[in-house]
Image (cartoon, rainbow, N blue to C red; front, top):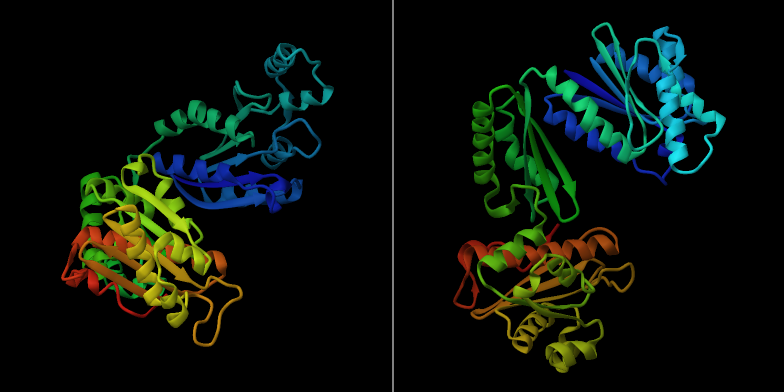
Length: 432
């Protein structure tokens, strides 16, 4: 079965309101083996609404709308659908009684306009809404099904789970959506695509999407099948191909963020960490400590923006700052080693850079960042030129710092440097 979702409401066409209902419905429909082909947002305009429903009914078997079932003049979904299908609206006294009872329970008098919510297209099945005054409606038109749901998320979700999902499950064909999500860091979107395209293009029935996100690339695999064993075997084959193409750049296979992965590895390895941050302004500390139980591995951190604080809190020699500059590989190394020794952690991370928008120069432009990871055997350092605005530079810097920790935990260190596999990820100059 194919479906379309129509979100109704002029407020959804402004920057002030996000359509979360469609996200919920897409996930739930996919679980039932129903593929969503299109989502449409339509304002409170009967002509536009009629066009949206008419077009959807030509394309798919199931149309679900959210919103436009309230009592006010701009709630037009019931009337529009009834007119489109050539059905009369009839008052359902049972619905009216339920609305009146609800108002009485709240010790309020029901406004006359709420009678509109008791108007039902001929032949529609009424779906009781225990959470609000607008009932849902199930309408069958030939081999098509139209479902009208209220726009209030709590009401919509309750009605879908209790009344719609069971009906759709009975129509299920056994087809399911099998999904994998891999997250990659240290490579740009085009580089990821270039490496993995020779793998996924061999599987014509698997839909592969490569998405760029700040500091990472997400690869989504979607496969519709009625054979779970074969579907998982196919996705496993593709994933093994991606492993060869991307090596250790895949940091997550279950949707976990990089800081969640690093936190898990720190805890599993009983490894402690401390950080000294300048340009990231505490972002790295915040991400690590957002994990429950982080006190077992995160011993402390400082945000040392000024040169004086770099010396006072992380023991960076003032003469080093004077000769090399606060934004330099030497200072990043000193920050990492200084905070590690100060706090007594196994690992120390130092971050210094120019996040912008000002402060850059020809020699050190905005986006210049130096990150160092100190451990008991020595220090690894990375020099970066990061694109984007201030927030983007800070986020990407925190991603690189976390990835350096991840690689260290995977491969360890020897002779004062990261091991040979990890060392290749800690070059002196990188551009993202």
